[in-house]
Amino acid sequence: PYGARQRLPAGVAGTRALSGAANPQPEFEDASSAAAWWDARLRSPLCTPDDRKAFAAWCTASEENRAAFDRLQTMVRAL
Image 1 (cartoon, rainbow, N blue to C red):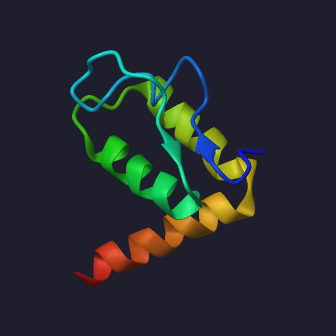
Image 2: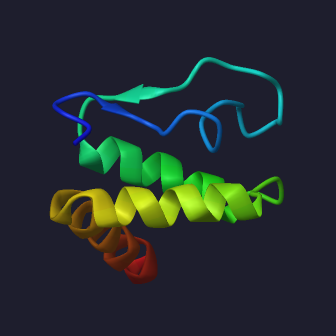
């Protein structure tokens, strides 16, 4: 559903930077890049319940998204 360049859902995560300042929605080259953004967002103290809902929607939007996030978590745990 996000195509080759991934875009985050409007109105939730991605409409602001991790600092909380207004920013255009980030675009990503692939699911792995989006997964890295989500990892940082979810670890941020600024992460909101809406962000977590948007993450859940992103994960269920495609198996590629979920697999990319799972691969990243495997790598992070190995560090």
